[in-house]
Image (tube, rainbow, N blue to C red; front, side, top):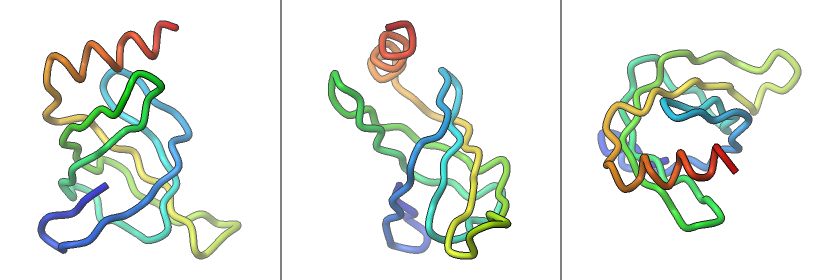
Length: 89
């Protein structure tokens, strides 16, 4: 994930993904409504899109971990097709 406004990258571990968004664990808090660029690593190759954080919460069991739900707010048709093929496999 890349945050243009803050100028840094964040690595996350996807825990759930759908055609419209993802839920993942990251190493720092992100406020809700934060916009960011995502690069999802799929077996068929990377998918890039823009996302918006719609939920953000600290992990009660690990203070260095945060959970975020991200809505894919801008995703190309090609990326959407690649993601849909991955999800249906």
